[in-house]
Length: 251
Ligand code: 13P
Image (cartoon, rainbow, N blue to C red; front, top):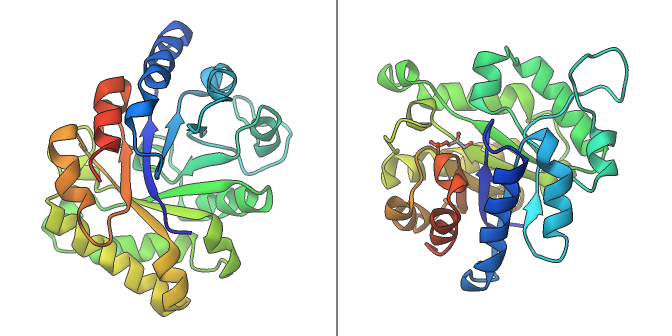
């Protein structure tokens, strides 16, 4: 079902103490947030269990930032769906541009990861987005279309109930340069149209599509007021409790 979501991707930030401090601050001010807005935080693997424990009596959901497609085996340094499930994590971010760029994640690998996650009853926040060069070459729609086709459009219609998309133009991530509300809306509408063409309008209308890339309390309201922007996937600003909650209050 289409939802209002503000999700914090903490990336490789916050040790245990910092995680506890940030979560404590979020919890103490949670009353200020409209209950219709769903909050998700994605700390690093080492801090997932403490986060689950600290947030168990709240509405904030905990997500992992990555997951291996295989159930177990000789994959040094990796974490499986079963391991995440066993500590109460049932949401995972996949396809982030930093994973694609620094860790060589391909469409085929993401296919496997998405399949495993959905089979294991996870909710998937799947990221798509073009590079600066692609945007300058006016190839942004083609890039996003190919990411959707390559990793998601083979899925069943039913699978889409468990998918959240995040449009994150790479040139806007961590750069302070946000897509304009019009650029975000245009791409979100395009994504929804692609889903409608490959499935049907009903499926397209129920998918939550988040925008990510330098979302701050000062620009969230304009972005979230767009028809096809259902919330945000927040990086830097998610590391500050007030900023994160202020963003959540921007609908
Ligand atoms: P920033 O908000 O720091 O630009 O990061 C966005 C992002 O990559 C979220 O996944």
